[in-house]
Amino acid sequence: MTPGAGTAERSAGARLVLMTLAAGQFLMALDSSVMNVSIAAVAADVGTTVTGIQGAITAYTLVMAMFMIPGSKVGALIGRRRAFMIGCCVYGCGSLTTALAPNLGVLLVGWSLLEGVGAVLILPAVVALVAGNFAAERRAAAYGLVAAAGAAAIALGPLIGGFAATYFSWRWVFAGEVVVVIGILLLARRLTDVPSGERPHVDLVGAVLSACGLGVFVYGVLRSAEWGWFRPKLEAPSWLGVSLVLWLMLAGVLLIRLFVEWESHLVARRREPLIDPAFLRNRQLSGGLTMFFFQYLVMMGVFFVVPLYLSVALGLSALATGARLLPLSLTLVAAATVIPRLLPDISPRRVVRLGIVAMFAGAVLLMAALDAGAGAEIVTVPLLFIGAGMGALASQLGSVTVSAVPDEQSAEVGGVQNAVTNLGSSIGTALAGSILLTVLTSSFLTSVEQNPAVPARVKNEAAIELQSGATFLSDAQLESALAEAGTNRKVAQAALEANAEARLDGLRAALALLAFASALALYFTSSLPTAQPRSG
Image 1: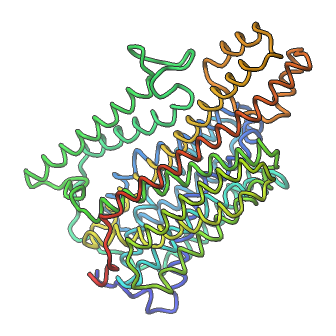
Image 2: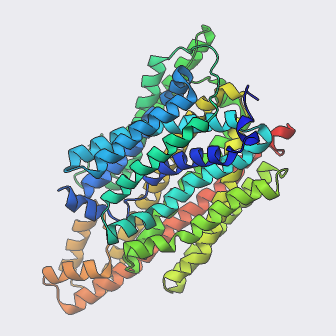
Image 3: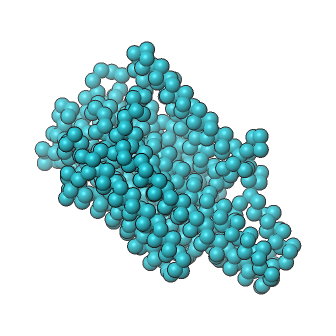
């Protein structure tokens, strides 16, 4: 334990310290989902398109993915608490800029750039500050609560965004973030800083390679729905007949490989690397990072699929859609906080395995619920299972990864950990979206082809139009489009029926993929420890 560790929990302000760090984690995660139900309103307000706002959200993820690992070194240079507070200031400036943004350009500067840079300073520092402020036997509970705060922010984001957009303005969300940042800065004075030892050397070559590698890979994944994974969609960029997505992902992997080789080269020459390659050979650490990847892949996939079902297929408002996601938040926070408190000596491996089984069961139950054809209430029980599973993972993984290395390396672990979670989030959203739209297109065309009421000319036109991919449309949106096109009643009815069935087919396929990812995660749990860190 580092000098001064345990000071926070012995003092009367221990809960305030934990609340401060959890609030920082909550704020960083909130922007990943808070505007997902209000994209159209934001686009209209700043004079751009839905694609422009989606690009801003994508850029926020990209900035975090690119600079998270280099950002972990900043805390070692200037101090973890100072990095946390500077990051909060930068993030607050970004939130204020976003709240006042008159156009897309200013929105990109505030939301994507400044908030993204603030996040890469805050998130690695949070991991190190938990390690420095809480003794080993209390860290599992502390990490569980901090991780639960981040995951709950993603779950509560649609509700918060929907409420603000319905009754006030989306701008109030970001104005509220400024107030929260001020409160965090006032409370951050209670944090015990983590001694960084000798002043580290910053590996600039490694920073560039890691940033470019992760950035190029994540950008390729995020473009998969528009461009296609392998076969390029109509008018999508390609090279040698293959979608640019695949080439970007391959380039990212190559750059990351070069980064690892460069870091090994530095270690061999007894120079300080950005990240010690020995991390990759640490069985416990690699196991924990793998679980983080699968957790966020499934979580963000669920938060892509379920809101689509509720808002488009069932026609719920943004506020009602966010409210239907509350069961997941409740069980997530409950599991993440209660498990370490009631079962402090339980095996992390067992908890994670049970959590993965719960996530798998929730995804399968959700698939069955779609077949039942009931109303919005059918998502409640599956989301309870998924939330409990995610909370179980959150209660253990932070402690598992940080306890795998000495305390002075906790910030570096935090950088890698948050890069992995961003990667999982991006791939989860992209995979769920790509599978959903691919199956939707195929199912729609099959239904239209097999319907004798649809003329051959219309079938050919539909096949040509859908070569670039289908759009997830509500019945009202499709009815409006068909009316504008002057489609006759029989053809319109056939299209509506085909669209309704295709939507469900696409949703079921995406959920099946997420269930498979959960099952696959079980094969990687053997690297997790069977005893809590203090017992080892």
